[in-house]
Image (cartoon, rainbow, N blue to C red; front, side, top):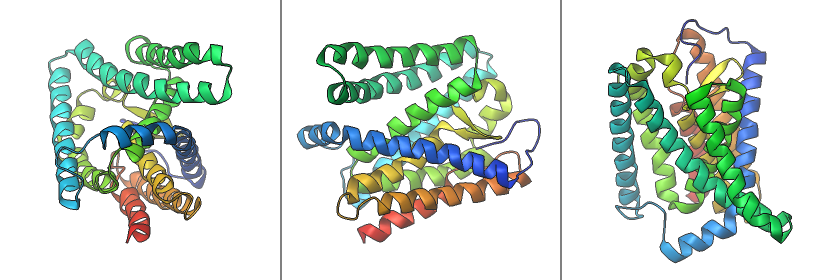
Length: 292
């Protein structure tokens, strides 16, 4: 999470409300996707098991699962720093494009197909199911390789982030889904202040942020922030609806967004802050309150 690289943004109630409004909208989109794709992902998990559980689904195994992903994220970020420092800009962009475009195509394929199946004539299903994700990939390529249009990149990446968060919520075991934001919050602190993320943004901020961040008013939020801001509300909806209704998801959204606003306020003192620790601490606390 950052403001513009060259100056600190003035934090005002208007700026904070606008940023919170953008994030709430993304979270509501994620809840809609979660509700729509519920039957598909439930059947997949029922047939094949969780999408990611190399160390199992116990509490300890879930913690190990999260640590493995953090290690992968660290290695990938180091590799990106090396590419930028060696002026290999096209290679850097290709890595970003490949990872974002793959997720966008696969997950949008599911989302678009389910939507077409439920709401459109049968003859539209295949064109919509393959046309929409293909268009997403083209637009991602345009924003990364041709011209970074902030509003377009924000819409696309926000939707992709919502899809990824929803996917994790519905296909990971509950404890892994909770361990991930905790582990990445710890890593986020290190990465932003001491680790490779600071070096990545410091090396070439105008390049590094393209395809990896969105604009929320005056503030820049990382794509990873969006994934976790949507994962926890989607998890609350997936785990506790209809037993507790929409209340767990609503409380989780409120907790995360309060944490985000606190973080954005603190951002007025610095140019760069980790966007996960405070929102994730509050969001995970809400879900744990229902689990235990």
